[in-house]
Amino acid sequence: MATSEARVATASARRYLGQLCKHFQHRLPVTLEETTGGIAFPMGRCDVAAEDRTLVLRASATTAEDLAKLEDVVARHLVRFAFREELAIDWARAPAA
Image (cartoon, rainbow, N blue to C red; front, side, top):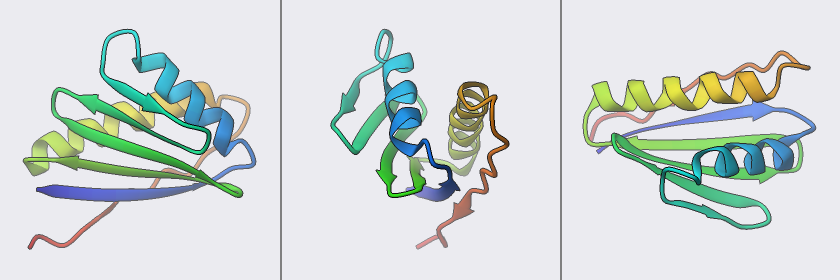
């Protein structure tokens, strides 16, 4: 399993958590709680958590190629939702086991 994480500094972590999950829920399996959520994409899964001033994105997929696609989809949507601020979304890959 290929995994990565991005910790995005923002004062709007909870809002972006809700926007990401609600955006995809009409066509993908989604869970959404007050400070956590998850989205099951065809190529993998992205778990999202809103911490104080940080949005934590954890992506997992069976291949590195699928992980790259998943990171791209999530980042592009997040940037679109956060057009009022410039977010730094830097994915850190976990070492292969």
